[in-house]
Image (cartoon, rainbow, N blue to C red; front, side, top):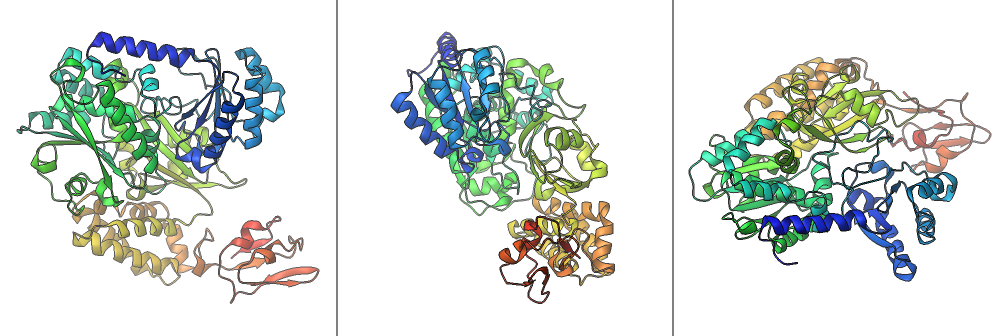
Length: 635
């Protein structure tokens, strides 16, 4: 591909790419992001490739990124200019049936494809999850019948699961780089910053600082050299938002980064990404090469005076490097430790130069705002939290995955309408943890809470980068607080005493409580330490590490009391406070519990119900999980 040098050339190339994207013949598309690969999509792709090579009958094959519904992976699409069918939970046999129908031209029209889907049971694989209707160049294929997608609003993840992340042509077909062309044509950096400011876009990676203000600070700062950074150091347990975007639509991030660089006067950009994300690194490297070939990166982009290029920095996986100043230190080759602020990176950052650092999702939101206008974006969301939020909804719910919803949607709508409610039949949801290990645990009584920066903070949690872990009545909230505190304790850089020593002392107190040795004085000291660490730590990691403790003390004091006063874990989770027993009236003497016990603690008694030797039992819960008649009781 020859380098694009003018707006007219870009419009021609984009138009031709769109014609190919929407006008292609029958195509099999397989989701190949990490979630799909983990579910076996790689093997399906190999089978499909062999079939196409041997007898494709004009059939094409390509890959897709993540569409969000992790629970329905692997997913396979059948696409033509007239229709778009999607199959979920596809097995090898199901893929063979899909390809048989495709090769036989059973999908010659949408009506035929719809009838085939309805009539041929083998095409439903292990439970086809949804089908989509006719797709046209003017809109995304309609998936409004699918409860998981109905309440969502795709802006940041607009192309995820709809394009091949390794193809810049498919990105161009869906308005990729059109916003960059617009800002270079208009040549108004101040106007770009005003648009982003007026849109109300706030950082999607932490406290939600207004993006336009940060850019304005950097533009006004003195310095011949300025930098823009992508913070892709996502390390929260249960979080994969940034990874999914990078694996599925890397050009959206590059375009937003280039627009930001133009606005603040930067000529160099750095993407700081975790080494644990090998597929994201691969898609980024490929996207950077393609963007250079097309002229969207490099010298005199699109024949303008603007020159900008990007490089990657692969992080070593330290959670603290998600903090801006620690990230800069790591990118400079130093130990990833935070420093006091001010000065802020926008004034004095990488190599002492003004530096803008935004999260993956923030950069991905920039191009749509430029193309559609500040008002368009500001109309979505709540009064002080504009636009959409991307969450990883995980835990004990039916529909786990990546969702993008308007700011201001209630937790209840996300958890029940999109997430599908409790995963286990008869279970009752207890709480949701938002904001990752730095966030708080909110009880079910708070599920009517609207999701925005201010309301979550007032409730004792935070938006954070977008983790959302839902737990049911089998989860001990004291133990959950200990789990998150263990993570932040291990990830502390150790530079400041409150975080280094305070988190460890809090963890020790929680360990004492969950082992049945805690006292009321321990709870008082735990809360006192939490407040001290929150108020005196050097960076955001230490300042937010106590949130799980403070929020569980606020909302689940009864569980702390049960552990201390009754030496009992209400959820039946803390090993030191539980024992397993067989309920004779329920037991069918099937022998399942004895077969799976790893330490032979289940003593069989012929035709009579077995018993469990308490001294030998390790509380591994295996017998409880496999019992078909719920005859294992936890005391």
